[in-house]
Length: 199
Image 1 (cartoon, rainbow, N blue to C red):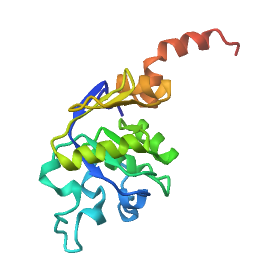
Image 2 (image 1 turned 30 degrees about the horizontal axis):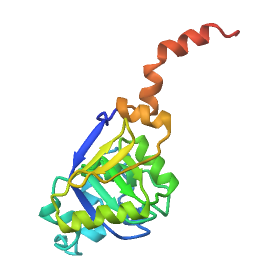
Image 3 (image 1 turned 90 degrees about the vertical axis):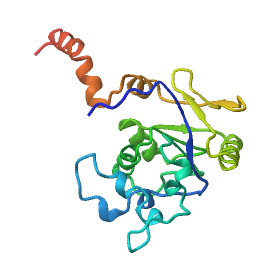
């Protein structure tokens, strides 16, 4: 499944300054029966976003109108810990987010995000605190995430920090590819190589 290409994203952000957010909170286990990568956005942080009667919890950041439409989520340290469910990354994308920023990601969650078109950007704790402070002071604060140059910048102040990303995953994000799309893209090269191999 191809995804929108990721190049430079400038957006407001949802602040979620909670450490050790695990995948069971991101997408509760009772919603894992589906196999299609759609429909998970409605249940993204379901138990934190809604009361038992289905009404929204007005104080939860993802429900606040002041942040509505943001394409970035800034999360606390150790974001995406817990079980390896790929559905957690699907729910991030299906909710409408293209980037999650944190001072530390669980490895499996990070890789799952990269496979479904969500860019996980790991920054220092100090820079993460700057982002939280700026967003909480002004909900219209914009963050610029530049994948080609691997930088994340607070637009208002120009404060910036670089981030690391695997070269293969970076190229796939820039092209809107998942692993299967990448293989299809080099199909001619694969066929040509195969013809050089003995049977």
